[in-house]
Amino acid sequence: MFACRRYGRPRRCIFYIFAFVISQLVFILILLRNESYDDLLASGQLHRNNDSGKNYLDWSEFISHRRKGLEVYYQYNLHLSDTLGVIRKLPSTRHCSCDSRPRNLPPPSSCNVSVVISFHNEARSMLLRTIVSLLSRTPKEYLHELIIVDDGSEDVTLLDDLRRWMDVFLGTRDRLGLIFLVNQERMGLIWSRNRGALLASGHHVLFLDSHCEVNEGWLEPLLERLAQDPNLAVSPILDPIDPKTLSYRRGNEMLKGGFDWSLHFHWLRRRLANQELPEMPYKSPAFAGGVLMMSRDWFLKLGGFNAYLKIWGGESIELAIKLWLCGGQIEIVPCSRIGHIFRRRHAFDFPPHLDDHQLSSAQETYLHNSKIIAESWLDEYKSMFYALRPAARRIPLAHTYDEMRQLRGEWQCHPFEWYLRHVSPELRMHFDELAATGTLRNEDRCLHATHKDSDLILVSCHLSDITQWRMLRSSGQLSTQRELCLGVAIGRRIALAPCGRNGTARMAQQWLRRGTHLLHAETHLCLDNPLKDRLELSPCRSQAVSQSFQFALEMES
Ligand code: LR7
Ligand code: MN
Image: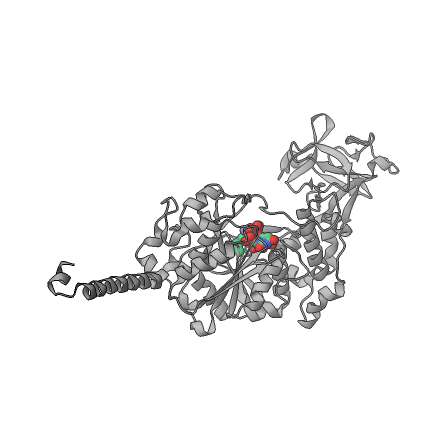
């Protein structure tokens, strides 16, 4: 002002100063907007943890916009998630040699990735941390696009807010495609992921849960493997994030993925071959859970996730069987690490679709999906599945088996026998070792071991969690899924005890099959149910109905 007065034209001068200040402000704003996330990371702004949500780009505002009255139970520590910040430093969990190894990567023009994240009722802070960890720890040039599917969540403004948030966050970052999809009605995880993959245009497609944090350098080791074999599909090692404390721990690279004859997922121990280092990629009968990456074309040629499956469950097991039998392979790559919150329970409802009162709708959905897998791929071995999951017989399927088996003909896929022989000796061993399996019936009741105190009772065979027994050929032991064996305790009492490996404990647990009788090897007495509610041992009588026990599935001897 003073200067303006001295030069005699105060009004015009004030106008110039005003214009100058405004232009500077606009310039600063543009600069801020254009600051890429790399710059933000470099300036340390994205690493500020535990600062009560006051992160850059209005993180706290974004997460506080949860629709009022929305009370969703997430099955993890929501408060902690909200206060952790948009990104945090993670411990390095992979072997140190992974950091220094030179990577032999093809150019991004021939191997970039589309990431598909489908979510149903995910906490905003959790979803955002998943996305930001991905954007921050993935080489830009290899990340082709991000496809986010809101699968009918209750927080209906989330996706729009996210879109705006990411607009600011990404700034001038070029080339990243962003696709936001909403399922007005919930379609379930399996269809949502297929929907995303169909729209994807990257070379590879990767599926991620909405409560993950990718660790440094997660993508390169996976890409390197896929570049070597286009029919391969890969999984990282999943590092567990504790749902209560959100602490990030190291996942075990000595495990591979597999499943049992009920078609439930299991981890299997692996053994290192001569000269094999634990950090080297290794073959696996199934994926590490549901996180997997493969060529998009190959995924779609195989029909994607089996669209006969509903809502949640089984899709990665189905894809694993399909891949192995139809010319692909699966590898787990220990140098790639992704953190995932393993929740103890489902955080969402399953829509009821049958009126089977014995099963919860979650169990029913899983059983429905498993039945489709069994009918589509297991050939004669499906009897194992039905023996262990008898309730599956009652579940109606909307499609014919021919429709479901169509792909097998088109791709000239191997029979399931091939999978047992070449991919999962563990599953085959279970088959070879078993003399009998499934429910154990005496007249109209089945023998059940209660979960709480492992009491033995005789109950309706339709009980949803009825005990599935396994009788081993070699030892004659009769065990539950919790590795408790049926034996004879003091006073000739029939009781359950931990399965003995050798010696007297094992002797007391040895049974011989004589027709439909179960003969106790040590005492030469037969299992009997004379009062219809309590087991005892008594001299064998060939015609006694109370001594006749049938397994759901009895193998040929
Ligand atoms: O109706 C639904 N719609 C969805 O979009 C139900 C769920 N979802 C979303 C959900 O928000 C989550 O992001 O689907 C994802 C998986 O559901 P979770 O996290 O409730 O279940 P989970 O962790 O037990 O999932 C495992 O099993 C699933 C079976 O269908 C899938 O295979 C998941 O990928 C699998 N997750 C993992 O193995 C963890 C690995 C991290 C990844 C990817
Ligand atoms: Mn999950």
